Length: 252
Image 1 (cartoon, rainbow, N blue to C red):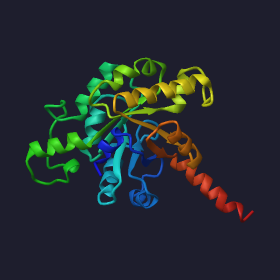
Image 2: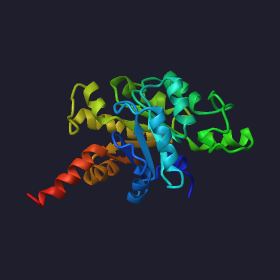
Image 3: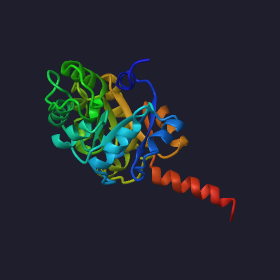
């Protein structure tokens, strides 16, 4: 079995979670027990800080759960800091052009593949000694770049974005995509369905993963049937509310 990045790009189904609210020390272990292979911690809407996520990355060590972060936007300092604190993947919202995707790919990788600034013996490499060239090559091979296609501009440029070698996954931001298409929340609308089909076809044609967030088992089964292979369960808040409500129903 290959690494997570290799498997995702090969189209293998990989399941994980997105965490927006519960940044607790035990979260990675609980996710591992649930069968998650990765977790994406949100910085875009949940306002998690790098200090908070550094604790989460450390808690993931030894669990088999790969820590990743959704950064607020595509600025270099968000991407590089997320990686330096130990994240093994970065999700970037609202990617809208080839130029933006190329800049992100450069920020993700050390030379000669990119232009990520080097600092070894830090959190991302376990504070260990070792040959810098080997560490750089290992990080370049491991870390995932997930580009969210969630605007009409991103949809228009999706082929150019997918053509960038350093982009690993095209991720449908379903709520935003419907908003920018002028059909907010209408996930059964033909225009939304056509957009998803187009993104999926482009992802497969370019050897990229195809990802989405699903709220429950039924939603994730439907997503898999639609060709998605990087599937995330969430939100954590909604799942807690639903589970607690179902449990308490017996007491009413």
